[in-house]
Image (cartoon, rainbow, N blue to C red; front, top):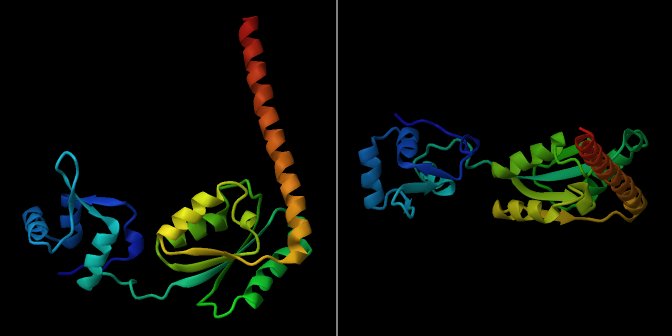
Length: 213
């Protein structure tokens, strides 16, 4: 009996022999035989353990007709973000998303992700949803008006991770939005300074308490 899987079922980078056997509903001995004859693609660790890469496992499942979503077409993502509810109320968030929709040609099954939050916040709901979609190989391209829309710091990390999944981040700058972007940068920098100042004050306070004991 063949089981059906989705790409999202596989979250680990590598799988052991026993795990592969369970996924394929085979005995460990059969999996070892498949490794020896080249049916399954394992590699050996420095301690001689067999491991199978996630993508190699998914490729095998696809060939065996055990992957239910492998043929789904990847989709383009429109990502828009503003820092405050005031900006959202003024319509800045909707205008930002609409600018991308209207200026990108040949969008493929587009999904628009919009949210309010600081670019310093790396736990934004829609950002995490985007990362999850990319990791599950469901995204073709990501469109933003400025790099800072995705994240204030660490953009290169996101870009590298996305590229590893064949996803390109495409920036289409909206000149009308430039003033808002600069104002948000100032606000974020002020928040960052306030945060560090609070932590520094707390460290000094704790240090002084220790001296007074």
